[in-house]
Image 1 (cartoon, rainbow, N blue to C red):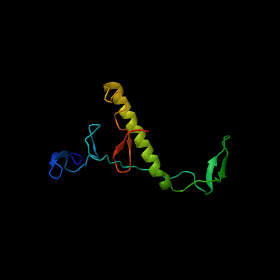
Image 2 (spheres, helix red, strand yellow):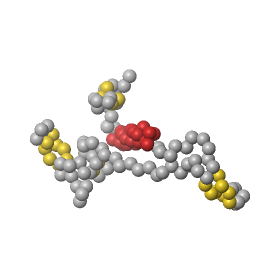
Image 3 (cartoon, rainbow, N blue to C red):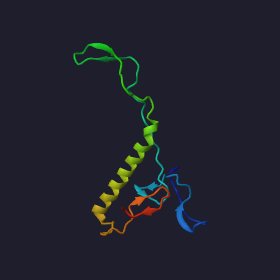
Image 4 (cartoon, rainbow, N blue to C red):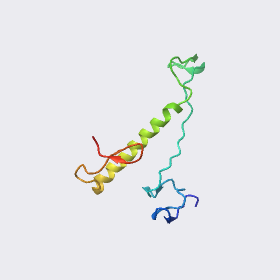
Length: 124
């Protein structure tokens, strides 16, 4: 399968990792320690500033022109939206796993805030 990833020992770090990360960092619903790779798609914006045919509540056909701010491209907002949703989903899964298995320590010893350099700091 093109998503099959063999586990190997990385000679540079002497750590176990996958050969190619074709699986996107997740195998069987569990992270394998590699980078998690997401493929994201957005549908085109449906409200644009051109005349469009529509139907009123009374069933009459008419034209409408939407006014106001309707961006034809969501790219500037896509990155923070995706980052936020991924963070929420991962946090939700962590909390569900903790509820079932008690994986988190009972004190504040676990660093929970990641910085841009991917090192962890304890919460403020």
